[in-house]
Length: 276
Image 1 (tube, helix red, strand yellow):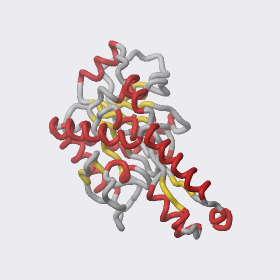
Image 2 (cartoon, rainbow, N blue to C red; image 1 turned 60 degrees about the vertical axis):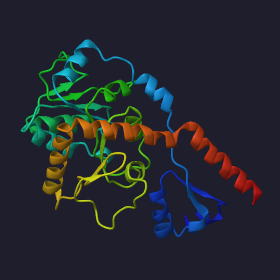
Image 3 (cartoon, rainbow, N blue to C red; image 1 turned 135 degrees about the horizontal axis):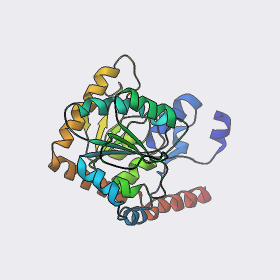
Image 4 (cartoon, helix red, strand yellow; image 1 turned 90 degrees about the horizontal axis):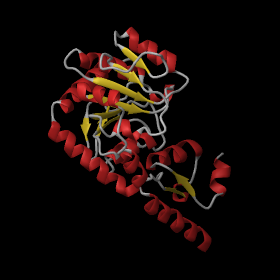
């Protein structure tokens, strides 16, 4: 692999924080590596986010603050600890948790929700949608953005990423985002002037474009990390001004990842390689 990589004229990573991995583990020459992030269809996401929810869905969103997360129901997305955090949060104030997406761990995650005493709605079941549930599994949606934009917070508990599309799409919707400081992508998106800490984050980091949180993958610190999540989410739910400020900042940040801007970086790279 190092031999193949180093024969290239240039190596592109989707996140700046992948570069050290290539240098340290694959022996890639640092001068060959540059980062070009994923692009986002900003205008398209904004347009789709304007679609109205059904009357039953609107009733759910009106009944309590809504935390929403979007992504596959899979090990990488690490949704089960989020259920524990949400169960703790519910003991202190009303709220709803909405999952948009489906995946191979559907049954496991739904079961984990019920094990925590949470009332679960499943879109694929015959039960009618109402406000009586705590957690709503909406399944795969052609337009997830209509569920994200009217929510109170977007929560993102991933164990690892590349350059997360779901996080960026939520930011386009102008919603405050709370994300694990996982490798790689969230820190680059939410706190671009900082570098990854030498030790894993153990507190809430209120960054310029969102809130970075401890990962929920370490058994030794799991209880403390879940407590940090619960406290931070409660703090945000109680502070409308902070939510508005973070949501507006998140939307501004996504202007850095439009198709036009990212395409320009690819064109520049190709021109540079051709001139070599």
